Amino acid sequence: MRRVFTAVLSLTVALAIPSAAAAFSPGAPGLGDPFFPDQGNGGYDALHYDVAIDYRYDAQSLRGTVLMTARATQDLSSFNLDLRGLQVRSVRVNGRFADRSQAGQELTITPSGGLRAGRTFTALVEYGGTATPVVDPDESIEGWIPTPDGAFVVGEPQGTPGWMPVNDTPRDKATYAFAITVPKGKTAVANGKLVSKVTLGGKTTWLWKEDDPMASYLATATNGDFRFWKTTGPGGLPIYNAVDTAFGPEDQAAADEVLAKQGDIITFFSGLFGPYPYASAGAIVDDADFVGYALESQGRANYDRVPDEDTVAHEIAHQWFGNSVTLGSWPDIWLNEGFATWAEWRWGEEAGGPTVQDQFDRFYARPPTSSIWSPPVAGLTDPADLFTSSTYIKGAMALQALRVKVGDPAFTQILRAWFAEGRAQTVTTADFIALAERVSGQELSPFFDTWLFTAGKPVSW
Ligand SMILES: [Zn+2]
Image (cartoon, rainbow, N blue to C red; front, side, top):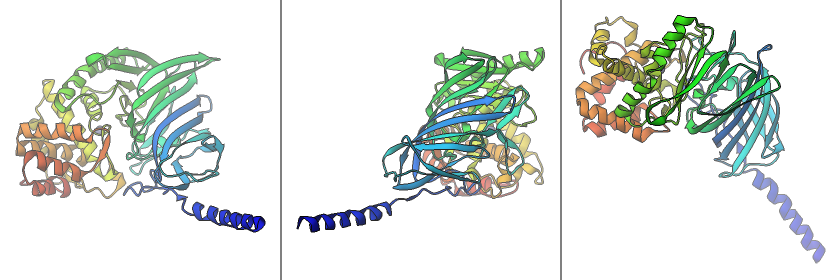
């Protein structure tokens, strides 16, 4: 009897294992964004990344180690990270070596055992290679962009996997710590607060920590020859500034002058929208105008040249609208750019320039053939149109038209509620319309149809 019983038992166990394993399935390799369907991955929620990168200037190559802490949201047999143009050396999940494969931007990781839904796990990825910028549908470059003295590191909309394995979707915000190692004498600036700077054997490691949730496209690690300093803004807010030493004395002075206004701009927007969302602020002013744009990296805008005051106000406004209240899908880019442009105009008015209504009138005078009227602000269908003028100008004009329609007090309440309710989350255009109708008590669908969903110059609204 004993023998038979044992045999039955082991048969039961043998059957139970494959049937339990069958319940584990691969996490989705993409989240189906209309513009970047492979971006992001399913089956887990990234909580934190510990990023260590050693950048070799002579070879423009980087070696990195990323430790992601995540929570499984399904029973996972495998899961993906996004990584572009770099080679993985090894992967460990919960400390054990895991199988991996790379195809396109997908790094597929198969741990030795399944990961149960609800459990927290770690994935440690060692990787490296030559830093190659990512080219976007509009032919702009992003990611880890080598410069004569370092690298300009920007990630919108899909550049961050060009230097680290990451769940590259605005829908999965996480905290980050960065240890960026560069040759001694170079400066590396990432997001958050500077924790330490350690020099050892001809290299310096800059350790930065961002404790507020951040979308992957807002990560930075720009490095090179910089004049670097820390100052304080409103309420003792640390402001870290870095200005490329390659600029001549006139540009250096211009950079100092415009960066000195950051505190006042933060104070003004905090009064208007609600408290500044992060524990630090600042700017990286690089001599890299071949890049062709500035980016609102979280708490630390990257400028590819000495910016003007409008641009600084624009990137600071993004800390509320874009970085804290974040689009969940790229065709909704006007939720970032329309809001930041309106806020840039509002700061201009505060600083003694034209009023926001003056700006509206100036642009409204443009003929119906002007490129600012199309494509529809919230109806983008081509990823090459992400940063066209309509998402900025017509998007900002839509907000100003809304302000006139509902009145200034209701409009201010809408902006404040949009920030208060969307803080650290992702949002949609439909969310904004619903909120504007709720706060104003008005039925606004014809208005938004005209301003957001119709191509061409609005005639009546
Ligand atoms: Zn912008």
